[in-house]
Image 1 (tube, rainbow, N blue to C red):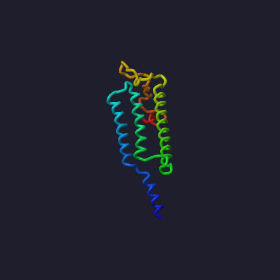
Image 2 (cartoon, rainbow, N blue to C red):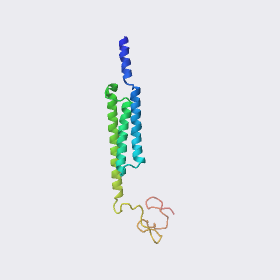
Image 3 (cartoon, rainbow, N blue to C red):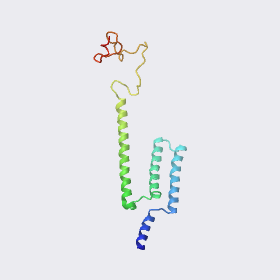
Image 4 (cartoon, one colour):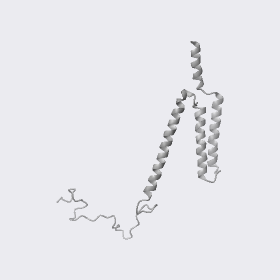
Length: 158
């Protein structure tokens, strides 16, 4: 009976890290935070896209460091179910982000190229007469009954 309790106790302890592991994870996290800070604040690289790429790459490395040293995730923890759940979550996140970017790109492309409009033109040209352009103005209804529409009961009023 005591051997069985001892085995369960060893499995429980296997999930916890050591002081050395926590210190290693902390030092790696500080270094992986300081390098992007230096890259951005020191304006080290000429191209902002290259800087952004390095910052994102170091962020991914820092996520892995946190998962290994602080969350104690590996292929053996919880019989591999933790790793399977992580992979499933990552697949869903990648699909969501890629789909969102795809939709936003195509909406931007299709909305900016509407027929008859130039890209970048946000408003109609100014009318020098101040009377409004005749293209968008609706003609006044016959009979002088305001802005009513025939068939809606408004123009039939006395």
